[in-house]
Image 1 (cartoon, rainbow, N blue to C red):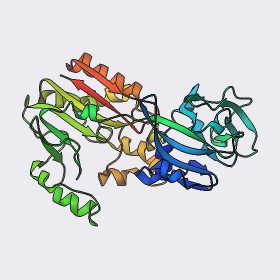
Image 2 (cartoon, helix red, strand yellow; image 1 turned 30 degrees about the vertical axis):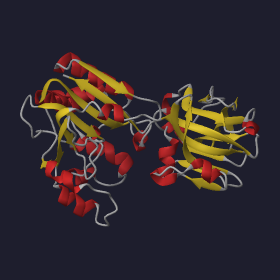
Image 3 (cartoon, one colour; image 1 turned 120 degrees about the horizontal axis):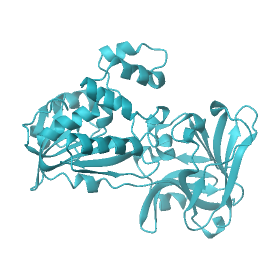
Length: 381
């Protein structure tokens, strides 16, 4: 799970205990300058590079009073699968931290009993944190918390790497020629260049978006791009068949019912060798962790039914976690924007394999790393 994103959002299922907790709220602190003035125990969101690879995580004071607690992890994806590893890593940031030990424990909430635990010696290199197994007794997923705390090392510093950082510039660079960015809001990611002629497709005009979502003028907006906007939807896409070199979307694909039907529709809009590029939230790394990943059977059924809009059944599933006790039909009738499906590396690969075998696409690729907020895919005609 993505502890950094949970901390930034103030997720109630993550507790960070230290004298100072600084999560950045999306803006990463100049860590070296900040830490040079810190005293006491702290947890500070940061990015650090190890062996040429950039990681996002937390700088920690390595002491017993520094503690991270993830509530009811066995009730959520992916820890409900009882994995061997968490996907997190630990490394020392100074010599005093080397040799200290970080404990990871699964503890019963009601009694404080330890259900399972392990510890790892902290070194200057990244060391993988395993999930504590085996369990010593039967476990109630809602009565067990996962905690990380140092057994020693007071006054030293360490880095908890939550996930490797994916660079979306690689997939954005695939968007060349004439194409469409779907649902960019006020801040498109694909910008026009000499080799890229992009149109932005939104359900409302940029002026309307600006009025609704930028009333205080806090977003930096390039109004010179507004002439490139056209009002439309992902289905039907406002483009002639065989006219596009790319179709790009970021955090839109999960809002679509019948994703196979949308891919089939977009296929017709592409020229030969054209690409569909998507950035999609990962269930295990985003706020979607409270949902089960969508099943391929459900996606195939939607394709067979030929639906293109979210159904009441989608809102019922969404409302269990997002609007408990409220009538899902109200949100459905109001056409509330929701995440219709929930994706992982596994079900996205399965979906794109079907797109290649049954819809005529030539190939696909997925960029993924555990605990990242999202992952990227490209499928080529």
